[in-house]
Amino acid sequence: MNVARIHSDIPKASCMIKNIMSQLWIIISCWRSCR
Image: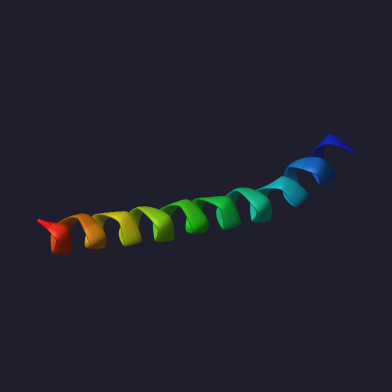
């Protein structure tokens, strides 16, 4: 059961990382354009 839980958490973690990276990219691009 732990293995299944880990396997189900991997897609969630990658999705969260993608969301954070996209948000960081938006913030960086806004910061550069505002400067």
